[in-house]
Amino acid sequence: MASPNRGAASGPAGTGTGTGTGTGAGAAATAGEAALLAARGRVAADPRDAGAWSALAGALAALREPEAAYTAAGRGLLALEGRPDPGRLAPPLAAQRLDALAAIARGGSSAVGRRLAASGLLRPPPGPSAAAASGVAAAGAAAQAAAAAGGVGGQGGGAKEPGGGVRVFVLSDLHVDTPAYGAPAGVRSHMDLLGRICRTRFRGDVLLVAGDVADSLPATVAALRLLRERFGRVFYVPGNHCLWLRPGLEAPSGAPAPAPSDRGPSPPPPPDSFAKLWALQARCAAARASPSAACCDDLGVDTAPSPVAPGLLVAPLLSWYSHRFDERDPRPGRLRFDRFCTWPVREEDVWQARGVMLRLNDPALAAAAAWRKAQQQQQGGERGGRGQASGQEEDPSPAGPSDLPPAPPQDGQRSPSTGLSAARSAPVGGSDGAGEGSSGGGGGGGGRCGLVVVTMSHFLPHPGLPFAPGVPELAKAVGCRRVRGSRVGRGGVGELMYLLDRLDSAVHVYGHTHIAADVELAAPPPAVGGGGAAAAAAAAAAGAAPSPSQQRRRRYVHWPLQGRGRVVLRCIWREGGLCGEDVDAEGEAEGA
Image (cartoon, rainbow, N blue to C red; front, side, top):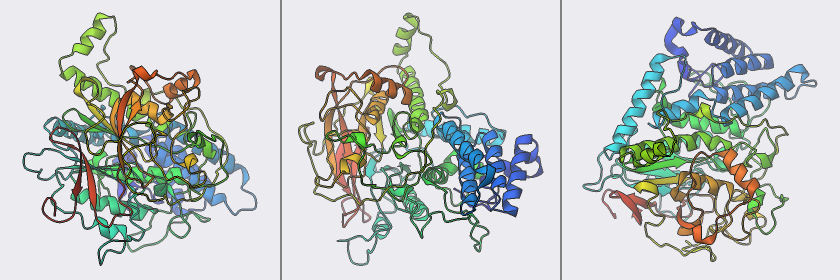
């Protein structure tokens, strides 16, 4: 999230919004913007005024900025902590926070729309600033044109490898704020190790970062900025460590007063883990989504689906874990693996089908469906012609995130949990009978109509993927739950797996386990039509699983940095097709 003294990007208390209020006196022309300015003034005058935070949350919600509204409501609740009588403001603030969460989950967010528009997949969303909308449209068109021409799109693309085209690399679990054991002399942390990546060789390439970059927001931003300087494009999904609020780093403590600094007031720490997620997304996407609001702190890192090469789409997916992933004992465990995370809903509702994280992927599914439809039309319109012949009309404009069904309201209390450093083992090439290992092939197939979708999440979508044995209750904290009624065993269908099927993912990149793997496992056949969290919930209720004869295979890749003494990347795409090879990223020459 941008610093609060940077005009349009943030308010006086560090609550970001992209409403374009930095255009001077004319920016307050609308009643909504006037209410926003008034609420910001109240917060600046007294950050301990919970009523001011409530007014700010209401103004931001009216301007379709629910992420910022959520954060403002959370800071208002923090302002009430420690008071002997929270008074009448606590229930309305809690309701505002949950209303904002529901709005985000159903896609009613201008920030989500701007990110998707900048990706080149969706039309620009309506907003109060026509200039900002035109900038979004230009960014989206540039990304789409670059992908069609074989480039990486986005910002900062440099020279490609001679004759090699775009390459796609994989990395996860950077943990840049931890020591790098076994590294060369002079390399003390994993941040130092990242700094050894060549500055020139990868400027025309794409890097997929599957979570757990660092524990704190500043360290995560610093690492993503370093990677963004070295790669033409960086895609990122947060891991559990990325959403921690560790005491002494950025955990909220009492009143949310901004800390002074030489550059003006700094934003206070995020009030909870969802607010930290919104802050990460805002910092990553601001430069790409709204060039007019970009500043030196905006990273230009992709968190939304986007094409990166002809016929190749990268689709980041938010994820969390469920105790139901433990097929031997699908009951809640006693251990709390992420005690540094705090949530406004029950812990089991963070992921589940009627929860939050799963629903936050619905806009990504809508965007990917629009991309596939456009690609199919470019390939000759055969699929569209068959649909019209059967009486199905083609929608000329792709669905936007606001077209998605509403999310159900949530209740419950915050439930802290406890942190885990995943065990490190030797690379695994197979997985306990679920599928044969793939030591370096381009498994996963090419998808429908020759289109390839590479999905990415931090947590595991398939129970057949390897994770450290012998750690008590670890299976409850590594992946999403298995769908009720699907066949019991290692091939069960999970909610995250269902989303991969909706996207027709050929390759899925994941993190978390710290066990390197590049394997092919049986996956459900591709589904046809709409999808999202509602469809995943319906599939769970129906309990239907595809027969073994209908199953195909999907490739899964995990390539952690932590535990390595040298930066070695896994390449999964080059020269226009899937591949599987290790590339030493250090030095100035290939293979150095």
